[in-house]
Image (cartoon, rainbow, N blue to C red; front, top):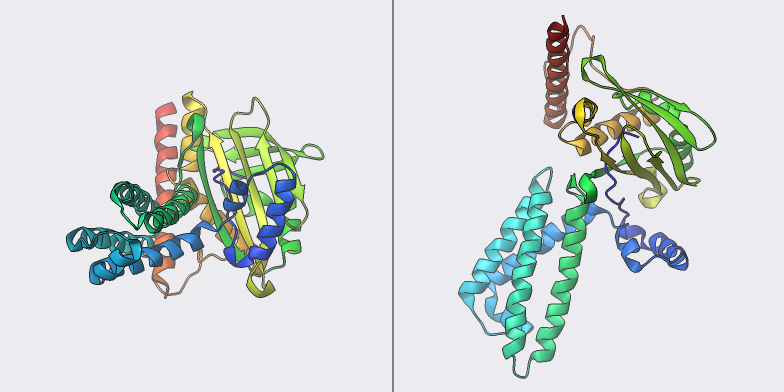
Length: 351
């Protein structure tokens, strides 16, 4: 798949029985409980943290005395009011923006402040040391969740300059159907428009060719590192490939057994020089957004048998009834126009 990050894939808390079962299996293979935490669905966790932040903030603003008694600390209305406004602001930001990563990181910063204040309270606590210690431990646990969620929902640069990101989508088809389609990597160019071709070169190896600006092509070889039928496929590029990348896709049965939740995580490193510049343009400034668009087309292909488009239609509304769709269409049209202008300019330069 395109090189996008491999932020770790996430899994739903509501499907805890399956997650716990897999964690036990992983533990038998030497993995730690942290590996289980990595399977938590980042988007669901972000919504929970957003509402939790708002609820806590309201309590701090309107009931500081009761909260102080519960925590075992002195009542300080001004301080609690400041902390409450901070929590409410962060919660609203998480719940209302399309990319809540910055607001989640603001929660991490707030958690550090809370831990510092609780550390001071613990040092001077008399008779309530146990209660303050328990609260400190709870806040540390919430901090861990904030960190986990922030990392999952933030596209960024990892160790060694690696770019990582990931997205998920619900497809109204069984895990078996979705897995069988995805397993054949030669299907990828049908919904990943930046790919020109993907060809199997052996039992677990494949050769990828991606389109790049100015008529350039970027090629690399990859191998499948793990293939669990109907559950997970993982891959990585071979050593010496132009584009160093790795990733995984997971297939989870949807709520109440309806459909499949597809989770994709990718990580890649771009080379230096002209090839690296072409790769950077190929994957754009928002690799996560590209994966999101790929998954939307994949969903249409699996559910409708084709990718729906309004191109070439002689009639119809100038705008759809969906503002979200209109915005996405404008972004795609703008990106396509910019790409064509760049190609034309570079052709003129060569002439």
